[in-house]
Every structure is written in structure tokens, then in C-alpha cells.
Amino acid sequence: MLTMDQIYSIKKMRNEEGYSLNKIVTETGYDWRTVRKYADHDVLPKEKNSRKRGMMYTKGFEGQTYGEIVDHLLFEDSKEKKKDRRLNKGIHRILKEQYEFKGSYRLVCQYIKDTHNEVKEYKQYERLEHPPGEGQLDFGNYRVSYKGKIKNIKLLVLTFPYSNRAFAVALPRENKECFLSGLKFLFKLAEGVPKALRIDNLAAAVVQSRGRGKEAIFTDDFNQFAAHYRFEPIARNPFSGHEKGSVENKVGYIRYNFFDDIPEFLSYTPFNDWLNQKLEEDSARIHYQENFLISELWEEERTQLLALPETAYPVFKYKEVKTNKYGEIRLDDQSIHIPRIGRNRKVILQVFWDRFRCVDRIGEVIYEGPSSLYRRISGNRLDRSFQNLSSKAKINYPF
Image (cartoon, rainbow, N blue to C red; front, side, top):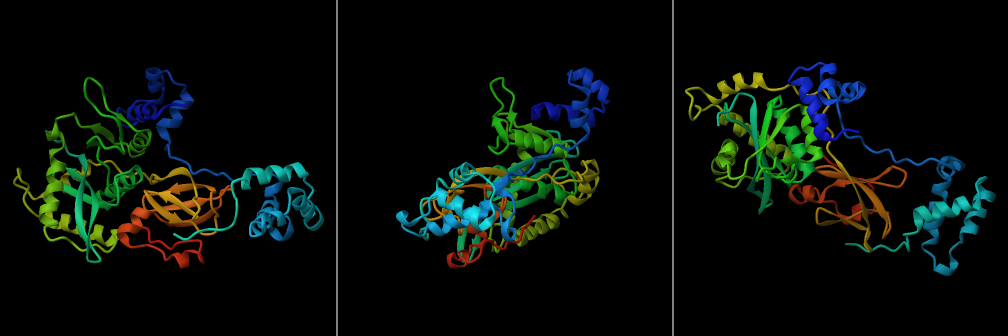
């Protein structure tokens, strides 16, 4: 399997240099079918399908799987004193006599060992010269007023130095999920993708900074994202702030012109609408060097942008976590209560920029809610008593 750097190189030769498949094979030495696969097809991350198969996961009595029946028996037993709980033999006998189970005693023991060995009890606790079509990107820190209190948010700012047009999106943090989701939103606002994107040494995109004779190394996720949207990522040279002076100036311009009076923040969607309306109105002024309106130069420059792909890039990550004695998980340095999971249980999280899903051992979504960072600023925090009654949080998705 090829690395993301190799895949990006193949796509660049195909889409930018116009190489035929045979010429790419000659240049790289890769198999023709491999080259065709990566040159002409999207390379997207796939969501895992971890649904298990076997007799314990076969539906039997009243549409329940035998595993679910065992889960229920163990759940009921967890409320009893240890000496009053059923042994594995007793559970196997109940399955055979009451549910027509044909499997072996050993199969039942293995299922219990694999899925319930960490559940101890039920009790839970509450708690330069710039060609048209080239972009520059950077984060900035800004203050907003939320329910009478001053809060800090991040703005991901995209500028096009040729026209001085800018777009921005408010985000809770600078991690990979926020960064790539923010880029998707900015490309959608611009109705196109820059041919090249110059960035600072952002931790969400860069593994090794450029300098001392070494080239920058981008993360696999960022390389895959860039290959899908077909732009060329360029890392800024050290001690060369002028290489992205356009976006650094724009970060300050936004602060001094739109945040001089601290704006009111209700949630991300209306705030981003307000901010980009301000930037669109601002484009009706004369360019600082050219005798044209920014909006006029932008109309010229936007024709040089790459088309948005038909399929949007899905941004998420999987991570395994363990509930504590309060039935909580730790996510983004915050504790989040997960209803009806039990304490000291391992669960799989699928984490997006603004929400997460909690997936059980057979791949079913058992809880979905807003991330702690998203709730902290947007106020989408669920009451604990309501959480204990409902297994899902209702969320409005900005993107």
C-alpha cells in the first residue's frame, strides 16, 4: 500500500502535469492498476464496520440476539450481591432451556469474558508575488461575549493575496477535526479550492517543520485531505513571516475592525454568517495596492480556483476510552457522562469537530452528543437528569 506522499505525487502528476497512466507508471515504477486506482479515484477515510458475527450475535427469541439476552441477565445480576449472582453454567442452562440455544458452554464463557470482564457492578456516580488562486491560512485568537461573559474562540482565516479577499470560520480549537472541518467550510464559502495553500507550522497539519536543510513533513490526514481537494500544501519557511503576511495582516485587520467592540456570540452558525457578511461588505473597498475594488479582483481570481469535489471529505477520528467510576469519559479535557454504560467499560468513540458518537462492541451507536468544547462555548449542555433518561442528544450541525 502506498503512503499518502506517494498517492499525492500520483494525483499531482495526473491532475496538474496531465500525465497519462502509462507515463506515471514509467516515472514511478508502480503497478499500472495501482496507479489507476489512486490517479482517477477518490481516496477517502472509511468508517469502521465493527459488527461481529457468530451464534452469540444471531437473532433468536423475540428478535433478540443471544448476546443481548446474556447482557440482560448479567445486568440484572450486577444489582445483586456477588453470592446471589448466576454463574456461567447457570446462564448457559437458561439459554438452553428457555431460549433454545444450541451453542456450547465454552462459547458462552468466551462471550462473557470478552464483553463483561471489566464490568464490576452496576452502581454509577453522578458528576511575494501572489498568483491568482493561491491562498494563505492561519488561526487567530478572538474574544466574544457569551451570556454576559468574555469567552475565547479561534478563527481560521483564509486569504487570497492576489485580490485580498478573505473568509473566516469560528472554531473551538486548533485540533485536526476542527482544522479540516474549518477548511471544508472555507472552501464552500469561496465556492472553490485554492491551487496552492500556504500555511504556518500548524500542529494539525505539520509533523516536521521546514528548516535546517529539512523539508516540511505533513500529517497523513492533511496529505489525504489535500489530495482529495487537489491543492498543493506549502509550509512557510522559518523566520519568513512575509511569506504569509497577507493572512497575518488579515487576522489583525479582522480583530481591529470587527472585534473592537466585543461581539455577541450565540452559536457558531449565526456567528459565522455574521462574520462572513462583514468580510463580504468589506470587499467593496479599494485594494491597498491596486486601483480596483477587492470584489472586482475577486471575481477575476475566483475563476482560477479548483472545482470542489463531488464528494465532501469526511473528517473524524476513532479512539478507545474507558469510563470512570462515575460513568464518565474524558474528551477534550472534560468529563462527559454516558448514560447506561456502566463504570470501567471500554468504548469506541467516533469524534467529529463538534460532536461524538459512542459505539458499542458490535458497532451500534449507543450515544451521540456534542463535544465538550462545542458545548462549552455554544451552551449546548444537557442536564444530567435528562441525560439519564435519554440516550441521545439533539444537535444542530453547523456544517
